[in-house]
Structures are given as C-alpha cells and as structure tokens.
Amino acid sequence: MNNNISGKFEWGRGEKNTGFIQIYRNYYSGNFYDNNSDSNYYETKDGVEIQQTWELSKNNKVVVGADWRESEVNNPGTYGGKMVYFCFWGVVNTIAN
Image (cartoon, rainbow, N blue to C red):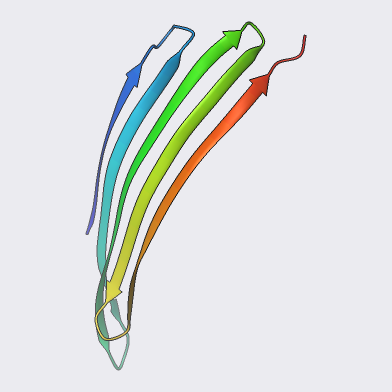
C-alpha cells in the first residue's frame, strides 16, 4: 500500500518577493516473500519545507529556506530505525549583465 498526501501554499506570485511552505506525509507498506519466510514492513516520511525570496535589486536576490524531515522504517524482527533531519540554508544570487 502506498499513501501520499501533501499541501503547498505560495505567496507573492508574480511579485518581487515570493515564497512557499509545503508539508507532506508519505506512507508505504509491503510484503516480502521467499521460500523460507514472510516479512511485512512499512516506511513513513514526514516533512515541511519553507522558502522565501527577496529581490534586492534587478540583478541581486537572496533566497533562504528551511527543511525538516523525519523518516522511519520498520520490519519487525529484522530492522528498524528513525532519522530526523533539519537544515537551514541561504543563497545570494547575482545575475551578471
């Protein structure tokens, strides 16, 4: 089974200063069969992404954002684990004439 859901809100479209926020959740479960065993597993991924752009001048922009993700996988009796990730980033973009 594979279920995915997401939502995105954008602001400032068509203007100099734009941005968005996006959230999502993905879920996957499955089965693995071979001659000797039967294994059920699942995986979930949750996340939030946000980004903002500011136009400083005709040729200069600043873009900043942040991402948060959490992933978990579980296969009872075999493996399992969880990972949490957070990143804040920024870029200065200069366009040469």
